[in-house]
Image (cartoon, rainbow, N blue to C red; front, side, top):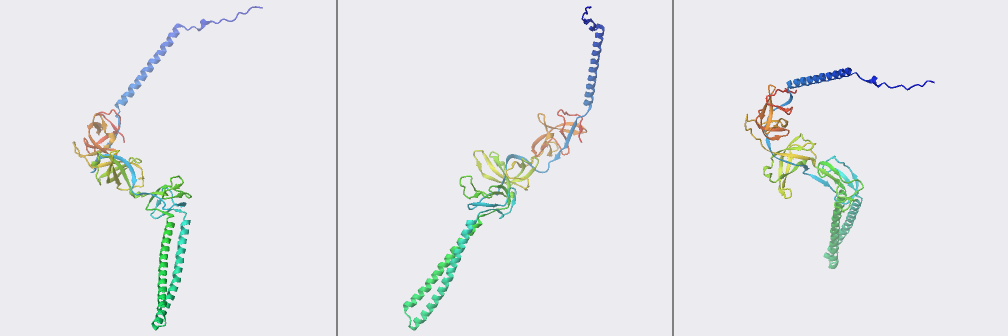
Length: 407
């Protein structure tokens, strides 16, 4: 049987010709060069187009400042009611009815809660019974007094005829005086009973808790079945209050002003208040009073401020920032007008500047800013009413640059 040799691998058949290898590498290099030239051309074209396009900006018109006042001082505080009461019971008792909830408007005299008045009513009934019994005694004494007076008249007639002794006459007079005294005593007892009735009735009335003034309930402090008392028992099982009522018409602002600046604050001074909950809402107000006492720990003086007009959005204990106002500053240069522009229009380039837009070109203008009014800056020099200033735009704006105004 002939011997079969295994097949041999011919590695030489896998060899690449040097001429073919060089040609493929040259083609790839040519493609890379062409792609690089194309990318550079596209980038250059894009830069050319972008360089020729004017940047877009948003402008605002400078408004003439209405006659007003400038900010002299800023302070922060809280909305507080002038009238706020935690309503409690005058007597100790168990709550059997609660007729309100938080946020409910109540009127003066409206019933808020009732206490168990069974004991008070028993005392009232007892006082009435005692009064009625005393009145019945007076009726009996009146009858006896009338009889004694009749006897006295008879004795006087008999004594004048000489048929009655002086002793019997004196006894009759004594009986009449005694009955009159007893009637007086019984009448006084009736008056005392009437006083006890009024006292018992007051105890019954004290079991009905009423609102002391018009307002809104902001806290519900007791529930049905709980004990309430005007005196704290020192534990957690007896309530001392029923509800807390706030007179919403008495809301005002209380702020602490540093004593170094309190001389800038005077009664009836106008202010602007901004609630932390509504930062874009300015509320006009005025200083009601400066409390004549300083806090030595904080070196501050309390100032009370009233709102010119109340609003349902104003709630007790809201945080508020207050600006005390003074006379409006006058312009120092240019047209002399005081104008308002959005604060975003003022840029800091070593000094305060704005960019005006005239004939689609920018004009760099230095301005003098003195204070703010809400979201606007008060410009006292450098601008005139009607000037158009850039509010939003690229950070690299320059003088004389062409711009496109956004509509």
